[in-house]
Length: 136
Image 1 (tube, one colour):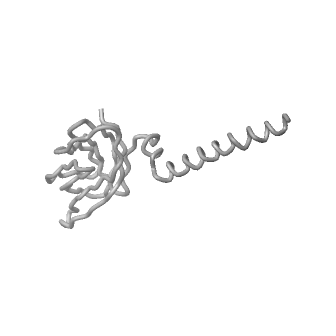
Image 2 (spheres, helix red, strand yellow):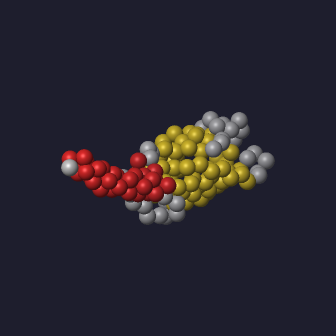
Image 3 (cartoon, helix red, strand yellow):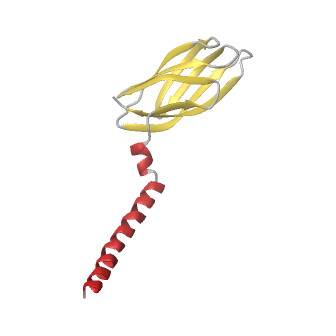
């Protein structure tokens, strides 16, 4: 009698546990947990380094360093719908702040960061990175 109750218990709650595990796997593959638990970071594929970053309700402050062996002129930065436009010279190794504005942000945001810049020979280059940041 006790064995049958034990088997019923295992079957009943074992199936519930299996359904919970399947639900967690599905939510994880949909990226739900990535957004919740991913640490804040800023990374750029090549040529620049994110020294500092901070998001507020109407924009993003970025401090970038030029890692190229030559001077560049940054013409545009994009993150979500936040944009910096202009033509800012960055000497080799120089650190410079940028304000990406004209947007409304809230919560924790993860998206691509795009940098458009000109080299000394006046050729336009684009480099991408990623930014995960919580709006303060």
